[in-house]
Amino acid sequence: PLAVIANVCTECSIYDILTVQRLKDTLLAGVDLTDDNGDPLPDIMFEQSIRSSVQMLESDLGIQAERFSFKGERKDSMVGEGPWWFTQLNRRQVISVDKFQMKYGNFDPVDVPISWIDLIRPVAGQLNIVPSQESLGSFLFYREGALVFAGWGLHGYPMVPGYFKFDYTAGFDCRCGTVTIPNTENGFVVTFDTPVLDRYNVNLVVEVANGASGARVVSRSNDGMTIVVTTPPSTGDAVISYTLTTMPDSFVQAAGIIAAMTPLDTAGDLIMGAGIASTSISMDALQQTINSTASPTNSGYGARILSQRRQLKSLVASLKARYRVMQLGYV
Image (cartoon, rainbow, N blue to C red; front, side, top):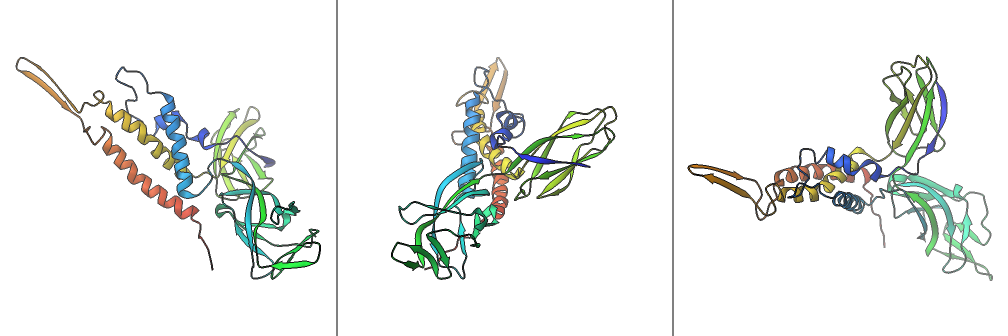
């Protein structure tokens, strides 16, 4: 199989995956999403619900769903067990550390080689600072703590507030691209220029088949994957586009369940008209009565909401187990 370098896709977003239409087609399937006049409920209701649900999950899990570059985050320097330091960035999961500096108080910062950064656990924002032989001018390290040259000599400090300064990118990683499987061939190797730092899902779209079918991904690893077809193209090259993301399906499902609750509440109140829980029609000796599950304290889709909340509890528990960060402290 041939090989191609995968590109980092900057346009991949949770809002490209969890769309209004997807919400209606999955978690709101079968629900009458119209008002008393039969007009569709406005899309802004669903869009607002999706955005608030993603932000709620971000806060609950302590992660960054949308890819974002943070500038100038400062961390204290504490004495380590040797000539290296451990620190944990505020936003997770970390995709890359783009710039590293040391800054003493309000003095100008000094650039530090990125090679000093050892990103140990990106999902937890955990990294180690391991000094190399590259010099830093007026800033030095030794095993007792940070050394600062103040013009009259070197002074050691076991703790310096805000000494480390980081620029970094956090969020779910995303890669996308297009591969061409030559006529009669059955596979294509995709290599990543930088490793993917977590498990990922891949979505394939066959743009040009030319007889090819059964496209799937095999041999996944953090530095590449192979796209193969069950039936090779026979009348020309096959073109397949791919998008991979480290965003787990359970995160999308959990965000969707939270986003569906507001439309379900609204639609449940309008099953037989706003504020109506039962209706009766009578003519002579004939009478028809219809009761719904709506009440002054419960919407018409209350049972469905309760069921989805039970699902949400399990999903959030599994997500917390995956993204849990152990908080350390000492006095």
